Image 1 (spheres, rainbow, N blue to C red):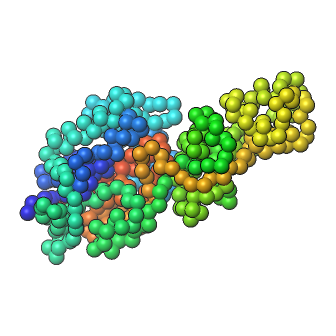
Image 2 (cartoon, helix red, strand yellow; image 1 turned 90 degrees about the vertical axis):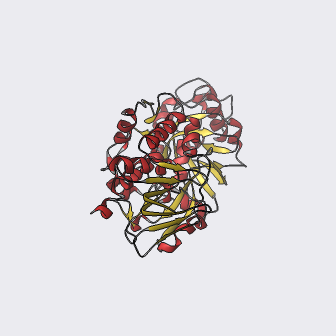
Image 3 (cartoon, rainbow, N blue to C red; image 1 turned 60 degrees about the vertical axis):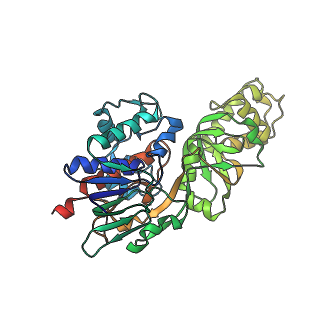
Amino acid sequence: MKELDVLVIGAGAAGCFSAIKASENHKHAKIAILERSSKPLAKVKISGGGRCNVTNVISEPEALSKHYPRGERFLKKAFYQFSSSDMKNWLENRNVPLKLYPDGCYFPLSNDSQTIIDCFLGELKKNGVQLLLNQRVESIKKLDSGLFEVQTPEELFRSKAVIVTTGGQPKLSGFELLKAFDLKIVSPVPSLFTFNMPNEPIKELMGIVQENAVVKIIGEKWTSNGPLLITHWGMSGPAVLKSSAFGARILETKGYKSQIAVNWTGEENQESVREVIREFVKSNKLVVNTPLYSLKSRLWTYLVEKAGIPNQFKCSELTSKHQNKLVEVLVNDLYSMEGKTTFKEEFVTAGGVDLNEINVQTMEAKKVPGLFFAGETLDIDGVTGGFNFQAAWTTAAIAGKNVLKTIQE
């Protein structure tokens, strides 16, 4: 049997970082991480196409928290303790320079996720944290003594405190380890997915990106904006991924079948587009040769045809009916979603340990002293842009800082 001060379950982003922060804050503590696979930080490795979007330039807690469909109010408080600027500084102080891209995303200057992995593994080794691989946890229980007992097939561990960082789970059964603690678990559903549109001819335009589009799920009040990518199966890109995140539970109840409206102009409304069309019709150029709103030529041609405007028509020949239809397809273009596809390998779920169970100041379970949580095990998920990693860094930093405080006091 191994006796420890802190035992972290899961060697993903949150697990490794919480162990590092625990070792920084509790210098003489015996700390170990149990990882069921042979590869720590596997999701960090594949994230961002192997480049790892570590965080986002947005750092002010309220503004940063707006990018989380689940966990906004909880994280707003947490970000005052450890925000994206803190993570940036932490990495750069360890000789991992970051590069800021125009969309607000920070990547390692090396453009290689291995840089982040090497940094974390180096810190674990330097701080004396044991990383134990191929250790599948079979049970966690709290003894009358206050210690936690964690069983794997090969070993029994006892620890003063435990940090659970097992990541997002596709099914409720993935939280079976926590059953003994009677914590409320929010049933998981997929988040961050692309829209399948098998019967929509727009798929023939695959590869085209409209840099500023707005996506809306019909029947819902909110919208999401950003680049929209047309794919061979339907639609993707940040605008669609944001919509899938904020609509994760709604779309799940609909069986991933819904009407989707696209505003190809961005934030323009029908009246402002109508004003543009009134000027547009003064031209004698062919309509198909005169794209509006920076639309790619092929996409513009597709929308013109969808509006029922013949290819040989000049702008000046557009009837009121044509103008109305063109306004409609530019501002409120309807498509049928009939399924979803996981975004790359970056599996993200909505669901997990209910945030009402957790003390936001410490990441400790309110009902179970000494039991802490961080990362996607919690009912927290963000949109693309480094936000999911930042939630992991923040919750892990707070858990690591506080993991032995109540015991020491």
